[in-house]
Picture 1 (cartoon, helix red, strand yellow):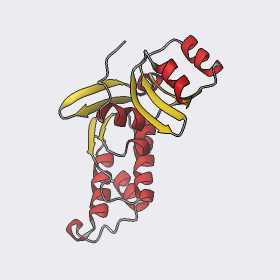
Picture 2 (cartoon, helix red, strand yellow):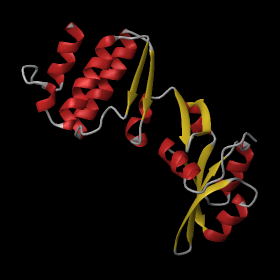
Picture 3 (cartoon, helix red, strand yellow):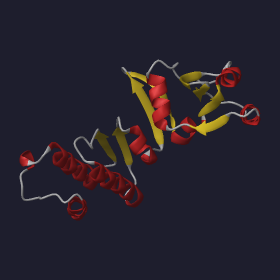
Length: 187
């Protein structure tokens, strides 16, 4: 209960008001408090931040990290706010229409994605035999998201040719794989 009161205080929740009289955001805060304070060996949050404003979501994320540090357990989170939450993840499972698109540890997923940006023809040349899952054009410049393991020598060659190489976010990987990009396959 001490943990529940502490987290409720951080959310500035009025515990004297029945939950049904609170906004959806406040109700989500109550559920977050309940899930975190339960310290269940497996805690599941399904879009737990619904209705919470940005500062409240930040408190929720801070409390998840604090609880995981002091009372480690399996915390499963479903979310559509990938970019906002990705710093919380150790493992990533991406689902689309009931199919598993990807299931790997966070760092492995990010290590397989990168962007190439530069003059369109040069980007096309370097990405010709790579798995391009997203592309954007602006004038004569093109940027592509690549999702596959490549040798460092390929990246070095692209950089030496004048292409900018960037890191992708988990959000980039997710949107690329679920909006017409090729499904993930190990290469």
